[in-house]
Image (cartoon, rainbow, N blue to C red; front, side, top):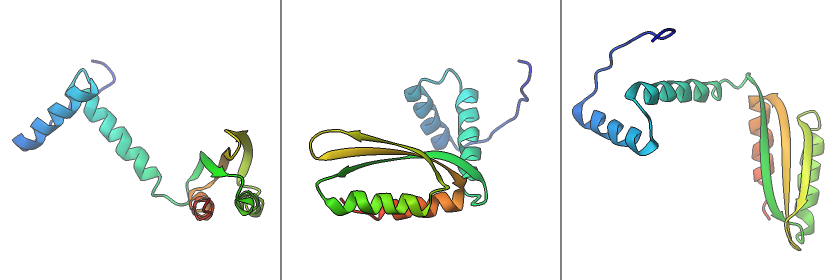
Length: 123
């Protein structure tokens, strides 16, 4: 196995049993493969804790457009953060429901604030 370093891990028997059951359910070919994914996931999650990190992401919303204030509020919030929203797609799902997909890029703390404002709109 080139390009990898072997390490040892000590686990309590009940934790190892639960881990083995989990990797079997998820279809991993080995404990090492599962452990590598856990480490990658943990590192990626830690990036989300750095509020100054620059991020790109999507926000997907479904709302009732017959509630006339919802669309206006969502548009106002997007305009208040015009530099953050790079593009948006508006889709008519049926007579009453619309879906809006926002592609955003900004520092994480600003994305969190924007997402909080968007999710506070009810409808």
